[in-house]
Length: 299
Image: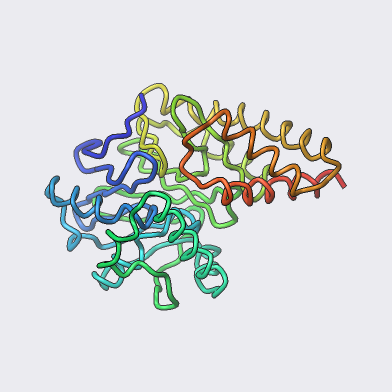
């Protein structure tokens, strides 16, 4: 079952934000973590929902970033600057991204563009959401754990969507916080978002496939429970294999012209998935990146 409405997931876990982009608030006996930083424009929604559900930002001890893309880190600056005691946790490659002025510029630019798309710029004026070089924190890697007291997140390196992608698995709850590493559950379908390295993405799916999953907590379009949560990685593997073949055909059809192939793939994508949350000009750059990887494998 796919659930996209903000609210309580289970005893100590809540989903906050909007349908297309959200975060998770997870409580332990000794600490509380916000998982994901989401799109910047949902901050007013998240703050209102926390108040409604009786959740306190002052209780947050950690903010776990599962990868460094702009649509997953938008609220990090606000929470870290407003509550300096929060420990920001991310992979080593993610921290390398956050240290690059060009990457920061892109994150801020794309966040502004996305906020403008949903007419949220005015509502965000009271908040300091801009990434600068003052955000610091802790590195985690494959096999590390984040202990909250009775709740332990096991970190799994899952590159492919990005070089810095990680997942977090809580074995007691059988909850997998997968970000985009296992696909985007758009409407009643899915998109295998293998942005950076198609083959690594498929390999990473194989790493998380054996896990018992009762709650599949995604960063876009909410979370899943039950049988669908358990089967989703298998479905993404199937769809990812098809997408790899499709991208290869598109690359060859356009004679290796990345711009032409990316435009064609983007046009087809939005015809089949109208209303997808990422602006077409941003997603076209993503498809160009995928096709560039495909081209390297063919030469």
